[in-house]
Length: 107
Image 1 (tube, one colour):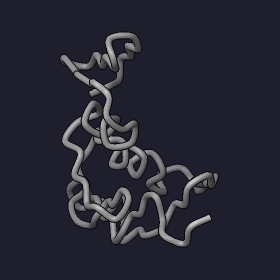
Image 2: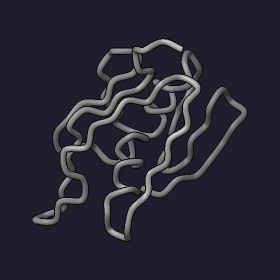
Image 3: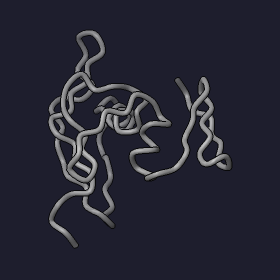
Image 4: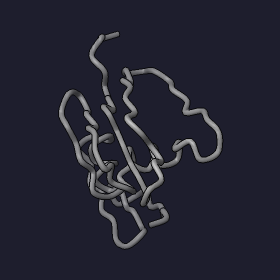
C-alpha cells in the first residue's frame, strides 16, 4: 500500500455562531482502509462527515483527494470528486448519478 493518503483532511474547523462543532481536525485516509468516527453526542462527527460530503462548507482547513485540494460546494460535486469521471447532477435535494442512481438528501 502506498504511503501517500488517498484522502486527507487538514485542520478542518467549523463553527455555528459561538459553538465550535469541529476544531482543527486532521487525518489521512489511505486506499483500502477503514476508519470510524467515534465520540459523544455533539462531538462533531456528523458535521465532519457533512463537510466531507459537501453538505456544509468548512470555515477553514483543507480537504485533499490524491494530493489535490478540493472544495465541494454540494453533494453532487463531492460525489464527482470521489467517484471519478461520472455524471452527477443535483436538483434541490435530489441527486442523480450516471442517470441511474437517485437519492434524496437533507439540505
